[in-house]
Length: 382
Image 1 (cartoon, rainbow, N blue to C red):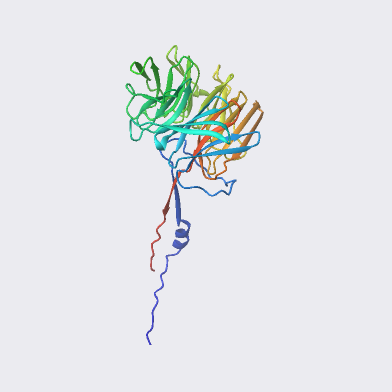
Image 2: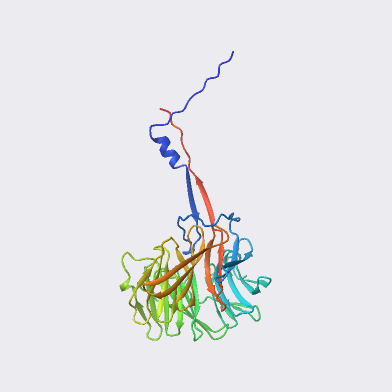
């Protein structure tokens, strides 16, 4: 009769408990955009998460409230969204992952069309943020280090790059009332002004680095005389006086420790900004550069993208673990309300956001890449 022997492995004391505790590590690969933010919050939806890099364009009707979901091509990875017109509503999307600009003409849920405009000058042009002025759709090309312009009438795309610092990390883009185009260089930490006379005649001017211009991201240009910018790298909001070429550092009233202001909008007499890292919306007087007030909700929201419906109503994307769109209603500094609406699909990262004339809210979202790193447990014998 053959006898089978068994060797038992023993773990050193306490090692087993520690090994089990470390058995699984999850890492979120968020790309190179600073709006890739996450926090732990229990999902409010039990939807099944679609494949990695599934991308969507959403219309949210606050009166219903209901979502209209428009699936984009896999790998689209949309970031910027801009909306113009009504009946149909024209929605423009910067499809970063597919190097193209998308255009949705939407009348209702049964009547809409979608076409794309490829940006072919560079393999990885990376259209990122966009702004619409008349028949021109302006956009930053984060991968190609260019500023692009789509003529919606002809479908022709022109690009402008001469005068830009290498690897600027182009982020937000806005058009001033006088037609000047402003962009933020997140990597170069510079404000960029583009003045175009013709396709062959244009001037790019970069404003020198300033202590408040560190990793600047969001822009607001409500008037030709001033450019507001959010500088998460410096933890401040800044304003460029274009006429006098002076930077107004409004960081003096920011509490310590400073946050990471990300997007900024101006409406009425106020300037508003998101601070996702500290989970709050900020407000201050745009004329006096004072009277800072910070607003937080009772739940984690991670407000990132920001859009204006009215002088007292703001919409924002929530880049928490689940993904949602939020609304902030302001009456007075002591009378405000936060509302949150979970996306139909759990686990999405909502990005660009805009409000249409009919007060519907449009925004893009996609499934971020997640990589799970296994923990290796080594056996040990006493």
